[in-house]
Image (cartoon, rainbow, N blue to C red):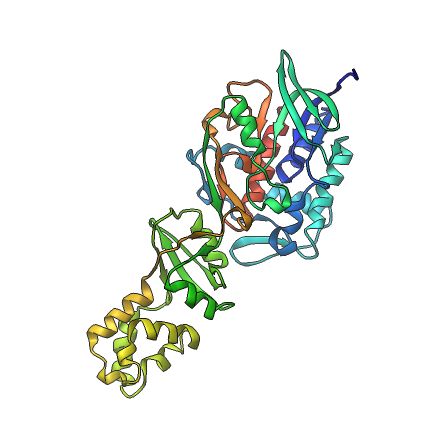
Length: 398
């Protein structure tokens, strides 16, 4: 029987958090092996941000993260902040630009970020192996024994950086959760986050007819509000506003959409009744919203007054229309699920982990980093910053 190859640290998962943790440990002189089941590492990095990789945000706050323990992320986010990552990007001469809400993207390609991580890993002496299936993990008195499709390995420290369930076509599996369960760690129920909403009721027809239309709205659920673009699709509604809200939405709840976030609709319509008494409501609203959307709203909320001038529409009807414009209540049947979700909500319960080191409190030498644990960022570079920060935190101690 061939002897196991010995490393100080083995990282399972060659994504953003795994690679960052690996070279951080390597820079400390630790021998590090990264094992990934895919044919190449960093696949989700390459597809992120439409291929441009929204690698961080200028304004990172704990409030941008969802977790059963909202304080857990604070230590790591302070220990490795967005400015430190931006310094690394600039050191590697990667051109980037800021979009709205402080989001930073590569000018050229997400490949630049992956190349940077791989360059740092190579310089730190990290060994990366792909197409590797983990068959068994056995705790030893001083570390871990791994049986894999590429042979057996030993390490003092074991880092689980396997990500979540989102986008299975990129190789996402629940493997990290299985390891957590093997070692007795609690798991919080996982659901798809940052994901489009789907509908089976009357909204589906509207979405199909308006497919491709984007509008600036305020969307809310459970007292959480996002001001972003909404995009109608053949399957329902997407766009940043919908994706952000999906992380807070529970099955069966209605979402509320303010179609005119910058005006008071009731005052606007009553003013129009005086100033544009002979005009049709749809023509006046088409100055603020797309004609297609206005016609859909007309069919729903003022069909019997469609061809009446404003002067003849009762105030009560106008107030009803105003209510719909500012609090349009829609009830999604669900979401598109993990197939298109950007992240997985919940995961390994952070109560079992050290917020300073990411080490398991009950299993020495076992660490979890990145999306596999119960920390989920908003859309806009926050999940990448959590990958860098949690990877760095663990990399200091593994």
